[in-house]
Length: 254
Ligand SMILES: [Zn+2]
Image: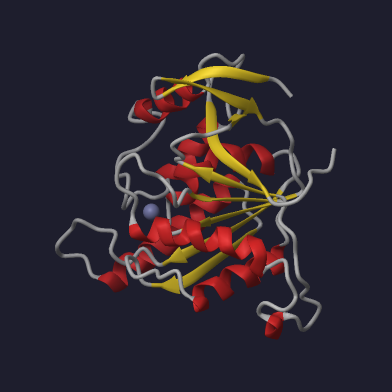
């Protein structure tokens, strides 16, 4: 697979052009809209090429409003519907929405058990999530706690039968994930060509109208998203990309 040196935040780094399409992938994100922001182009591309996509959205998004007349109950209902609509645009097969309140997600055993169970149930080859180890700028507490819990869930908790053994009933088995792809990483090492699905990513993101009011391809308000995706692909023979820090948890099948 070609590896090119490209410039990332002023530094020359090696990004591998990742072209495989796994059979199953999962996105685990803190809030409604994070999945489309972090990996919407890649998941839309993979779903259109036969990959089964599962989403686990960990909080209800209950704090996501600047409107002082908005209540938590109302914004939760609005954001659930927005997430369902966005997932349909991406081509998501399984949408799991956990009930944790926005801003109160802790990297504790209960949450770890939820993610382990989702992994053992949907058996993804690849999981996308927040990079918990970013140093460049602020990282939302829910994002950090999601990323670290996903990494822990992949290894060793979902893999080993003596962790959460109470889950191993009704056919549920320990499961070995292939790779974790962290979005918004300080030092990404893979890039996916999303040229054929950048429009779908923007359409999906625009479904979160309580968070990105007015976003649409027609209005030109998608320019910032396009510019960032274009700069990720700089040096590669395609126009738009999404970059991730990939870590592998098992030897890849070739
Ligand atoms: Zn978020």
